[in-house]
Length: 434
Ligand code: NDP
Image 1 (cartoon, helix red, strand yellow):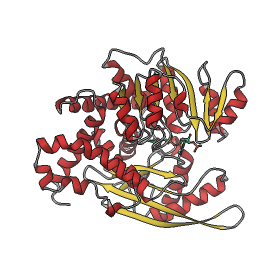
Image 2 (image 1 turned 90 degrees about the vertical axis):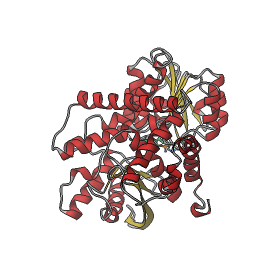
Image 3 (image 1 turned 180 degrees about the horizontal axis):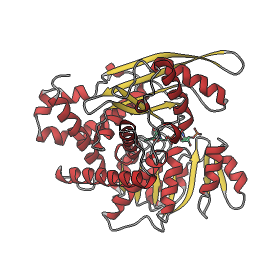
Image 4 (image 1 turned 30 degrees about the vertical axis):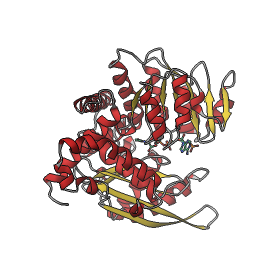
């Protein structure tokens, strides 16, 4: 703990994985001999840098940039970049740690990493965003590359920001190295279905969990927190499969509409106007309600998909959801449920999918983008979505089978942690003490 002081989210993420590993060590005592667990918890490299930029009023601003290259036993470091004022080293370390296991679960050749900055994009002009991204990449370009480290988007970083970073990388290196970043636009090496992948993938995972109890998504009421990339495409796929999404949110409040969210309007507000969900409520009118500051988890639903940020769903929220009859919880965000919430869901027999399994569809499709870039090819939307669906079913089955073989059927937390750990650990062992 003292070695990683002041990093509560990192401690939380590590503790959760270590709690699952007791059964693995009991079966394979040799893992303890190689200090494999200690090595897996230590990032291979951490880079912290100054990001100076000039705002629209001509004033110099300074932010802090991070890239944590956590584990490259399975392939180049891979993981998103987050721009949010809450970003600090501990947050990026927790995300990089989770990413290592998530990437292993996909079965694809990608290591784990994460990056970001405490830059707050809210209210910034397009020119300010561009200058910030260019300055960020001016340092980051020394540390990334198609075979080294391949960043993507995360909170506050979408197609626009990836485009500006890719442009600056190309300019600095004089190389059109499409495989250096994923989540790119379709005109310059991006993949079909990448934008949709995390949300769609999380819904496929929930569909597979429900199928183990012979249940379906069709006809269910759902609540999806957040209203960013993951939330929007979670809502889209849930609607396609027949669910009614009655609520979504942002960091100021949530909207509730018994008729179901109007996805076309939500996309217009969030993706085109870059506005807030309070604007959605105003534009939609009628019985839609905007509740400022309230908890979206007070809304009765059978499917809950937290898709905003870490620790957004507390033990108390979980009790409310259970009381209101929730049957499945799928984490679109990373670590959105607190440990108390996870315990409450599991104690109540609710199907619960941890983020490192349920939201792996985004990074898996990023790996498909890397494949397309390496072969100078591009696949159709249908082809790519079919690959995503198969990958998500594979992750679900791997977690379920692992949980069962370790004597905890239905425990997706245990299944995901053990299956991810064993793949990374086996590779690390094969590569020697590194
Ligand atoms: P976006 O920036 O597109 O959207 C984030 C959403 O979450 C916004 O609606 C934002 O509201 C809300 N939010 C952020 N912080 C808070 C907070 N402190 N309290 C309440 N709401 C908050 O990000 P993404 O959709 O890409 O990411 C969402 C989550 O999914 C993150 O945990 C991310 O790590 C995870 N994830 C993303 C992947 C991807 O492919 N993009 C892949 C795997 C996981 P506001 O506008 O008010 O800030």
